[in-house]
Image 1 (spheres, rainbow, N blue to C red):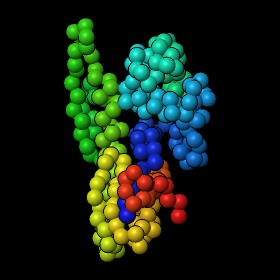
Image 2 (cartoon, rainbow, N blue to C red; image 1 turned 90 degrees about the horizontal axis):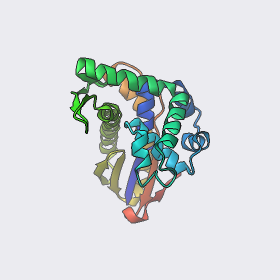
Image 3 (tube, rainbow, N blue to C red; image 1 turned 30 degrees about the vertical axis):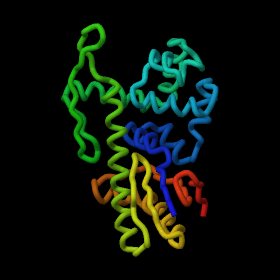
Length: 238
């Protein structure tokens, strides 16, 4: 049987932790449906558009790119419209705005950023379409969140594998992709594997503290899916 664990809102949790945005922190702890709330707050047509909008903005998306992207242009092909939405996001999540400003400035002054896990990203100016030297904003905003998410998933993956092997479960860890971990096991061990997944995600803050010496101050949770094959996966709520 296939058992798959998907981290819930990995990038949003990581971006919130790195930016220390107080509003986002409160929403996560209060279990607010952030994407539905933002759909209404920003005047967007669906929860999915609101979700895609937030992730693109975290990775340096600009008004022009929204207006010319087939995923967003049906909502509006006006750069002015999308700039108003971006401004509304930064007004609500002011900590993200400050963080984005700081990391772009720091990356260009120092030539690099150092993540809380010790990962280092080096940056240099690049030329835009006019031949002008500019900061690579999208890379500077993207790499920290993506890389920190990868570090978080590595901690969870190693923790899971240790417990999985110690439990003598009849099965194998067969794949990891971005925010997912996939196991193939004997059906009689399915509930045990699901419980292990939930446990290692819940234990992430303690393991992070032990490894890096400072607190991970947000909860990390997962969704567990089960099925006889990848096509038949369904959410397990046991």
